[in-house]
Image 1 (cartoon, helix red, strand yellow):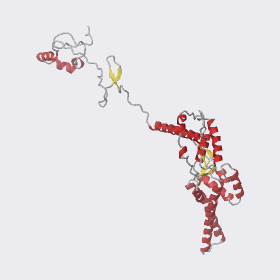
Image 2 (image 1 turned 180 degrees about the horizontal axis):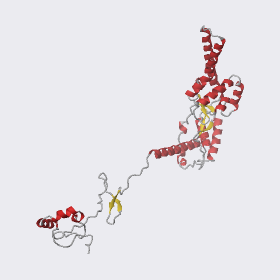
Image 3 (image 1 turned 180 degrees about the vertical axis):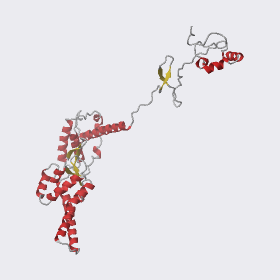
Image 4 (image 1 turned 135 degrees about the horizontal axis):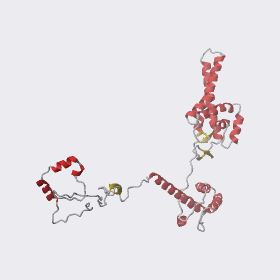
Length: 362
């Protein structure tokens, strides 16, 4: 495994292809390339063309360049870092930042490989063995590395170790796993996965060592007489349960929207008051709600009717005072009709008249 820092500053652990795997992929590609070159030479030789030596040399050069430079460059560019040999062995060429291989990098690798696999073969083998990422000269010049795509499937923990043992259920609820490192937890999980493959003596010795290392990072200590395998199984099971619950909570928080709903008082409506500026008061709720309807306070001017012919005026402006045509039209109304209107507008003796809210002007 090797760490690769991506362009977003994210550290990735990727499996570097082993040297035997890379060597086998190179041998497959070289066999295909030489076989193709041999077929072209045989085809040209048996075609019966009367070409001179210069023409044959030009044909051979073009075919050689296409086979040994064009083939890896085109295949690795189009397939994102794979040739036929790499496809067969499950490896891929990637950039040093984990991104796909580009055309420039594939071309540099092909040009360097033309010399590495012929004249500089010992140098290519030496650099691949010495480099921490198994890089040959072409990888160093191009800024690439070969990673293993087909990783063996990790064996799961046996069923009888996948949950907390019943005798340790109450104790497991009080576990503090904040000090447990990922390396120690992975070592304990690997021990449980290979529990049946280990010999009894080695299994007991490794279990005691791992249980001692885990107990130094976890509290409280297990009950007396707890076997190392049961202790480690409880630790791994509780850690898995808590991590799953944490990730599930994070997923729910990311999916559920946090938009706030309407308040209990409902939306507000600006209503003019007698003093001039507007005041925000709660509006009436819709019919779909079950809250009681609250009337919106409004101002209603009192109606005062004066007898015709008197000199007093109403405290509020009338229609005749607002527009000139309305005043002329009101003066033409006959007296009997006006008196009838006045009588009809007066309140009855059974209902008291509403007191005016504003005093008449002096």
